[in-house]
Image (cartoon, rainbow, N blue to C red; front, side):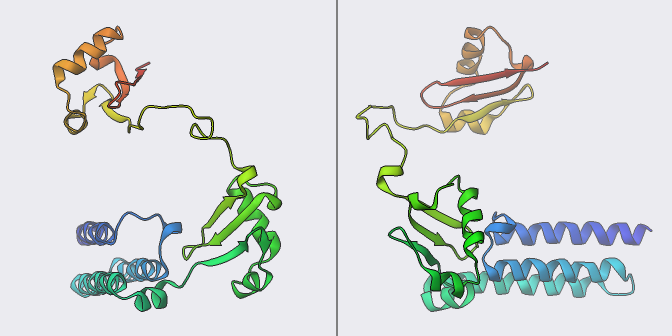
Amino acid sequence: MITTIIRTIILYVFVTFAIRVMGKRQIGDMQPNELVITLLISEIVAIPLQDISQPILSGVVAIFVLIILEILVSVLALKFITVRKFMSGNSVVIINNGVVDQQALKNVRMTVLDLVEMLRGQDVFDISTVAFAVLEVNGELSVLLKSGDQPLTAKDMSIKKDKSALPLPVISDGKILKDALKALNITNEDLNKKLHANHTQCDKVFLMTLDRHDNICIIKKV
C-alpha cells in the first residue's frame, strides 16, 4: 500500500510538471501534436500505477522523452512553417464573403447543420449575417459578421472612453495579495484608505478587485 501511494505521488508530481512545461492550453485548444502527447502521457502513467512490478523509472523516462519531443517540435514549428503545417494543419475558410464554401465543408467532413450549430456557439443565429467564418486548427470556429450586423462600439458613436485597465484581485478571503498591489503600484496603506472609504475592513472582504483607474469592486463575507 505504501509503495502504491509513493509511486502515485511521484508520478502525479512528474505529470503535473510535464503538463506545466507544455503550456496552459485547455484540452479543446490543444494542437493535434499536443493532444497526442497528453494522451500518451496518460497511458504511460497508467502502466506503473496498475502494475507495481513495472519499474516507475521506465514511466518517468518515457514521459521525459515525450516532454523533450514536444519542446523540440514546438521550436521547429516556430522556425519552419512547413513543420507547423504538417503537425497542426491549416485553418479553413468555411464562409467567404458571405458565401458558404460547400467544398470546404466536404474537405473538413462537416455538414451544414454542424456549421449552424457552431455558429450558434458563437451567438450567431442567422447565417446570412456572417461575412467570414474560419475553422481553426484546434476545431474552434472564428466568425466575422458583416459590417451592417456588427454591434455598435464607442468608436462608431464617437464616444471617448478611458483606456482599458485590467481589474486585479487585491484581497481574497480576507488576505491581501501583495503581487497585485505591486502590479498596481499601491501600498498597504493606500489599500486600507480605500477600504476605509468603503466602510469595511480587510478581514471582512471576501473579494476585492482594483484597476489602475481606481475602479473598485468589493464582495463582503457573509
